[in-house]
Image (tube, rainbow, N blue to C red; front, side):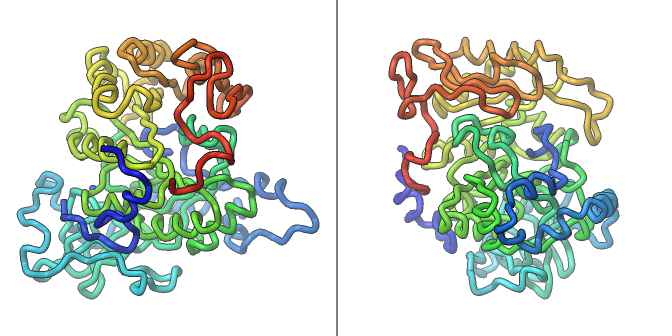
Length: 460
């Protein structure tokens, strides 16, 4: 049953600041977009002589020499302490259920914030003996004093789980929303995009490995409290803020607080994620989000375990749950030659989307290029990406797109009823928008999405 926004926010465990639900879960590594080296010129062009100077956060971000040094430091992978995640165990099977030692799971508490330049006491955790257990994602990392979780940016400090990346940035840029990619959410608008460091997956093909695999906090070069992000988005005319580059699930507390600040300022929120989050945390995390692009990296459980270190079933469950919420959902699948690009797997994936989500959920097939630990795998031929789109359309999906290749047809939104061009794109640029009150101009069919300022208010 689909949930209204009010039902979504009022359910136990769904409102930011509560987690009453039962314990259970690129831009990211599937995107060619890498964590942006912030573009000083982009913001400089937005200013006039009478406008105030950018927030001080930009003084360091716009210093290219400083950025280059920061990026060099991000290549340092040494870690001085032991990880609290056991590589020999499967995610989520560390031997106990949350709260079995008589302690209560940690719930979100705004009073636990520390200075953004320091750290924040995390949400979603409880104690188990002399360890703390993180309940944010299915890995359920247990950490002794000083240990980091699998994602690196969550650590046991003094018997409490702390979020090390709260209020800190590894990159920030004003990007076209099409770059996320989101094609049915304010097309042609800008999204102020930022990330921190760390990730709760271990994708061997990660294209943002410089930040997702970073094991040093020096990569987090700038302080940016939630209210400042909202003010920056407003200042530079961004319709939304995108939590991206590394998976925002690992910096959930920062993302939730920032999303609420943005919503208060009339700015929409977009999560670009792999969807690997616990049932306990998914309500609070996605409640303030208006749209999400979720990576469905494969439809093969073995691929997920061996290539990403995660479980396919968790992602599928979260996709089905997201579809029942007011969050605008789009999906991206990176096609890797010889690994997840067979016709049989593409057919299985697209049929699952059709039968378990909806035929009108936008699906993006994206081309792989060699990266991180998969430098020996060739680029995805454009013909493979186009073939995947054709298979998906034959199955009955209505909005299927191609990415990372030059393909006018694959980047165009067509009316599924009459075939008329509704929105045409050239790369990340919208060249034609024929929508009339969110409907096809030829036959009047309503196209699902959020397309104009006249759409329903944020959060509805």
